[in-house]
Length: 375
Ligand SMILES: *Cc1c(COP(=O)(O)O)cnc(C)c1O
Image 1: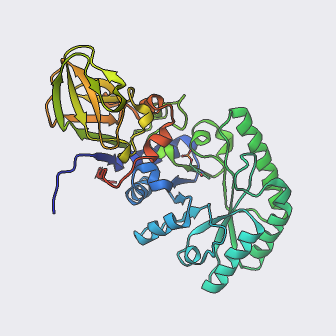
Image 2: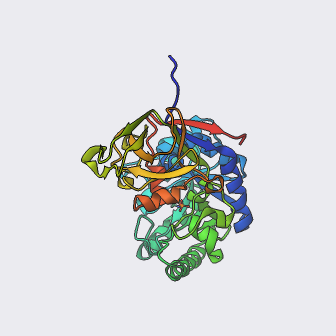
Image 3: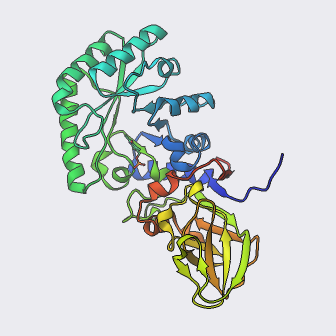
């Protein structure tokens, strides 16, 4: 069977590798952990992970154990940390596959130690402290018990407590620095409990790029590695980061229509005169956010046009007016603005969302991934 791909997410692995290098230059840390959860924010987990390692990443991170196991199945042997676990997780497969586990409670520490006994190995854990985000780290009132248990299991050789981490809210620099203070208290309590883990990490992309105090000896970066800024107020080029993904397709139909022709479901758009419509075969079935209807910028033959009317499941239209367009013409939804292409941040603005969501929501069941680059 063969077919011609036409809904294409083109991912430049050299851009990912280059962005990892930039993260080392900017942060000066010993270890950059690249987060490849959620299919590497829509970029394809295994190729993105390999590109990150080629760029010098010493760690990979995922949310779930299943994601980490996919990396192992692909032959990736680098350290992998993951931090969201099922309530009844046994940790057996994770421990057998040498996956480093974020731990948030005494119960998790004990469960991980038990998995280590069953596998005759010493599992590696990073203690996850909540310092204000109110998500799943151990909260300060739990620290005494949590740290005592961790220290005991470390001393007895049942666990290797090799890291301590927390995660910031990105509310403001002041709020993040407040969390940094709480984290610093946590580190000193941990020291009092007898533990000084090798890896200390707090910053994700935003703090890694903008708050030097939070860097310690490792940062965890996802979005920046893909060449996307961590807030809509920043742009990747400010940090020398290159967008890795180009979302592209080709015009599949062209028609000339009279004035006042309704366009797509709900006729949100009607032609103002005799106009040419170009049919673009991408829709919310591919993860294109329907909130960008009437808005999302699309590059076609050197011009940028907003989506005309609603984005449907499989397609949407552009109204190119009287401009020339032909079936087969190349179309870019987002890519590298340095090449004159709309950016993922432009789509975030058009959809009233954030760039993280625009790329991570891409659905790969019919979208085809094409990897370019040597990394
Ligand atoms: C997703 C995640 C990151 C990466 O965040 P970015 O903003 O994409 O760099 C880091 N740490 C944790 C705990 C996360 O869940």
